[in-house]
Image 1 (cartoon, rainbow, N blue to C red):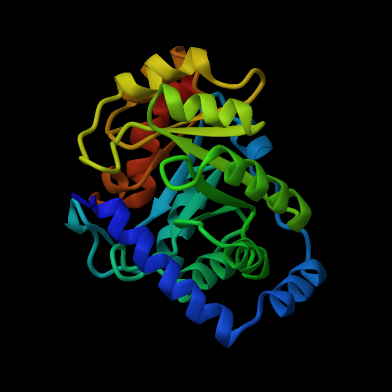
Image 2 (spheres, rainbow, N blue to C red; image 1 turned 120 degrees about the vertical axis):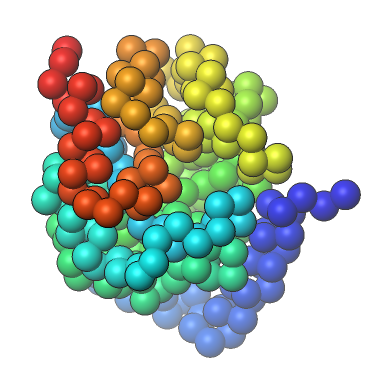
Length: 264
């Protein structure tokens, strides 16, 4: 039986084929290589005791609507004021309510590095990310094989972008190691079942590529969670839903990160 991830990826391939017809990848590449360099991503994450990638996400298949009204510019501005090191902006529209307009609004509203949070299956998306001001692109090991991870990683470097390779289990971490990933995110949410456990990151941390920037993703909802992940070897956390459900986003960031930022 096909999972929601399989469904999303199948639809993504169709959608990107249409994008390529409207805007050829060659034209995107030319525009991307003329764009100003984006702010660095991994070094920003490592500039704090624990880096925070704060996410702007309208909805998800598992949670439904997360924040209404949803104003990406106001959201990332609040994150920046509160001290986040980077922001993540959803690109998928059918399942997550994201898209280029949200990303461009976020880019115009803050100076932080932005993660192009997408189900990347085509080089078009990498060049598109560079054109609209991304610093990094998400590459999902549950969607791509090892050769594709390595190929897309090389394409990101050519485009002047960093790649955040997302894994969920030991086999996918081994793929990240083989692909030469320099920045690895461990998703505590299984994208096929949507079950969540912080133990996923803690278990896989010791298998991460040597010297990589390690990011814990999903299921993080307290300062204690952040400290636990930090003490387990994580350099940064990616948090969206927990922050977005709070009325005061800046206060939510400070409350989440206070213990990790205040203690050694």
